[in-house]
Image 1 (cartoon, rainbow, N blue to C red):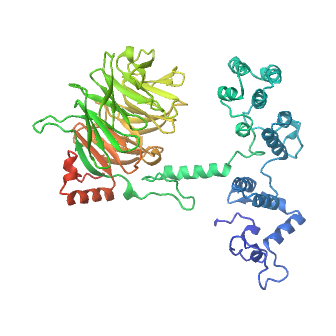
Image 2 (cartoon, rainbow, N blue to C red):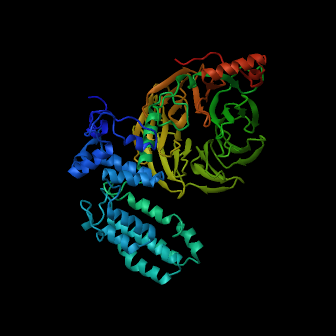
Length: 621
């Protein structure tokens, strides 16, 4: 079937049989002129529509589909979008011409009642006292979405009424609403107690602060309407910004299907999105190694690599007692932090503003450093076993350490080095992850159990044992930027993606080798489209996050590749670290050639200054 064959005849050609000619924007007069030689039977599109209305044929037209989609749904969405864009006259014209309404009369009245603060009227419309409209269920109130609770909607309306009365300092009327209108609808005593305490607010500002509410003159009514609209059937009230939501889904789907996605800019709606494969990081830009005596025969193992949030620095650590901070733009050593003598450093964490660095050591301490000056600011002691991990709270004013010491398993510290909270755990903590929205704090023990905590309440939420037979171990955990998924690397040559809400595995990534050492995996790339991991065979693996398809595999290190990290501000750069004592910075071919050319022009000083060597031609398999 040819494209457009399902359209009604009026969409494809006029009564003369000719296809409609394109016209410039606003050239309605030219469009309405009859075609030359068409005779008296030749009608314009508008004539045909008027004829259809007069003959009763419009109902048949409205039943036709639009390329397989409901004509009514498409038209209602378009009218809503035109209104959102500010084209109100155009929206009214489309509504009149099509005969479709975005919302039923009762919904229009309900919207006006909520935004106008007419709470009695709003509740009457919700429950069945509104203007009747054929087919819209007015007799029993607004048509609700499946699973919606009409009483819950009534409670929300009455709560807004209660808050506005308090804001107006009409405490007596507010108390009556609480006793006689809200209490019968609410079974949660905690909610009612919270509302009761609001009666004691000193003034309107105190009320708005305690209730986390911006008042009747703010956005509270609009927010209430948005909440209520989610419970109303889309057959009578479209969800807000429906076209924009659909377009976002289209963009997201195209980005997720892009195998070599390297552009974090918003894709165009006018063309299908596809990134050029040549921009994908596929070659070694430079090799770096920790400075040390030339006579040393033993290579220090590099265990961890972490880019700073601003992408300008790279921290590396391992068996060497020193931690290195590298300048990413110049690819040179910026600082070497000496503070853990005769002990390796297993993990590092950057502060959200990239100004501080935390180091976790086998010497049973953690240290806070100034990333700019290289000065050690705080030493955190009191651990009986190694400090394994650390994460920063979003405001950068506190951080959490994880330790193998059961009595000090998880502790929160402020920037002064004071312990502000210690979780009463009994498990050893091998790794930590904190979601960006601060909701989830995940601790990985040394076996295969994940412990989930709520950071705001500091309470334990649930445990998840990945291998009841106790034959596997987890080696690292990390949380996606959307705070929804947890990536767990396992010792059975597999990494898994967990939905933290449903506790279900949504994807698996296989191919890399593990089982003896700590191998770290992480999210990365533009829009976090990829999962990257080291491997005990020295290779680096990159999978597509959504599909689980292996996108690239490359030989990265002569021995185990322990960790890999993507630059958060550069989709075309990632780093790997291995037991061969090397840190490799990867990018695309164009950038690698440019760097090599610049290095040759300066007689290779750029590479030598960074204690590294030039890209040695490592290529993707």
